[in-house]
Image (cartoon, rainbow, N blue to C red):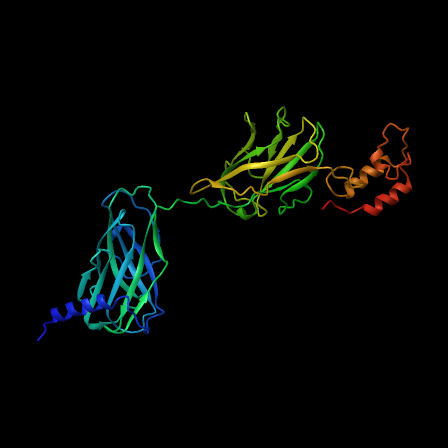
Length: 388
C-alpha cells in the first residue's frame, strides 16, 4: 500500500510528465498576472498590480506573487515555469501552503505543486509566492522577470497550459511627464493658432522683427520648472540682435547666443500651472540680414523640466518656419490676412497720389498712381482673405 507521501510524489512526477501535453480543459481561459512584493516581503496573496520596481546590488532578494484569475475548478497540481535571464537572477523557491508537495524544476526555472486533495484557489487566484536573488550587481541594470508557462491540472489527464506577456520590469529608465509632447509654433499674435506647425511667413527685410509664439498644448495644466529651446537659424542672421522673450508665467526667460546658434532658456520661479492653451512664451527675433524665399528657421531641440522625474525631450519635428515669397493683395502689415488693421492702414493714405510724400504704392491696388475709390473696391473684394 502506498504511503501518502509516496502518492504525492507520484502525482507530482505525473504532472511533470504531462506538462506540455495539455488537453482543452475548463481553465483554458484563465488569466495570469504577476505582482511585485515590496522589499522581498511575505506578500498578501492579493494582486496589488505592482509590475515595476527598482533593485540594486548582488545577492538581493526579489519576491513576487503569481495569480490566475478565472480558474473554475479545484486543482490537484500546477507547474510554474518562470522566464528570466539566469545571468541576472537565480530562482530560489516558490511556495503555496495549500499544496502539500513541492518539486523544484530540474533546470531551476520553476516549481511543481501537487496535492492529494484538490485545492480550490482563493478568489484572488493566488498560485504561489516565488523568491529570486540577483546573481550579479544589477544597480542601474534594466531587466524583467516573467512567467513562461503555468500548467493547471484538474487531474493528471486534464491539464490546461496558460501563458502571458505580463512581466515585472526592474530599473526601467524613468520618463519625464512631458516626454514626446509636440512643440507648436505660431506667428499670428492676434488669435494664437496653437495647432499651426511648419508655418510659412513672408520674406523679411533688415530691421524686421519676427515674433514666434511657443506652445505645448498637451502640457496644459501641468507644472514645470522651465524649458530650453535651441534654435537653428540661417547663418548669423540674428547675431547682432537676438531679441527678447516674453511669456505669461516664465518670468525668468533669457535668450543667449552660443557660437553656433541661439538658445532660449526659461526658468520658472513660482512653478504655476501651464495655461489651458499650453502657451510657453514669445520670442522676438530682429532680422539683421534679409531673409529670402526658401530660408527655414527651425527649433533644433527642446526640453522641459518636470517637478518630479527627469528632463523631458519635446517633439520638434514640425517646429519649422519657412520664408516664402507671399503676395496677398490688401495684406499691408504682412500678417498673412486682410483684416481691420489693413483697412485702417488703407484709410490712412486714401486720396493720396504718387506725388504725395506719404503715398504707399502697395495700397494703389490698380496701379493708376492714386489711391481712390477704385482701389477701395479692390480692397473690399479681398477683405477677410488669408494666406493658406
